[in-house]
Amino acid sequence: MLELGSLQATISLALTIVLFVVKAFALGDCVARNGHDFGGAGTLSKNAWLLILGIAVAAHLVWWYPLSLLNLAGTVAALVYLAQVRGSSSSSW
Image 1: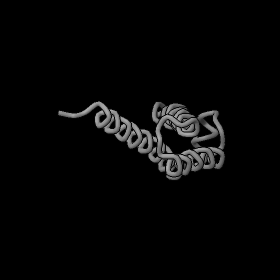
Image 2: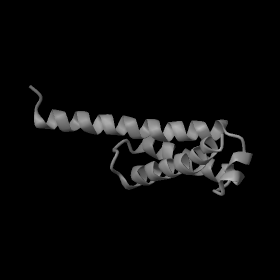
Image 3: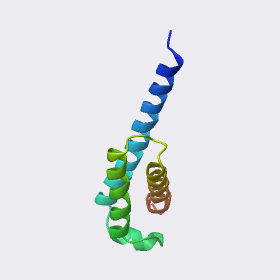
C-alpha cells in the first residue's frame, strides 16, 4: 500500500512531467510553424513566442517543482500559445 508521502510525490512528479511536455510541445510547434501563421492569428510575433516559450522550458528545467511561480506562468504562456496560434491556424483548414 502506498504511503501518503509517496502518493503525493508520485502525483507531483506526474504533474511536473505533464506540464513540461506541454511546454516542450508548444516550443517545438512554435519552432516548426511558419512565421506567417502568427500574423494571421493576430498574436505576438514568432520571435516573441520563441523567447517566451524558451524561457518557460528553461525555467522548468531549473526549477522542477510544478507549482513554482515561473512554472505556472510558463504553463499559462504555453496554453495561451496553443490556444491562440495553434488553435487559430488549425480552425482555418
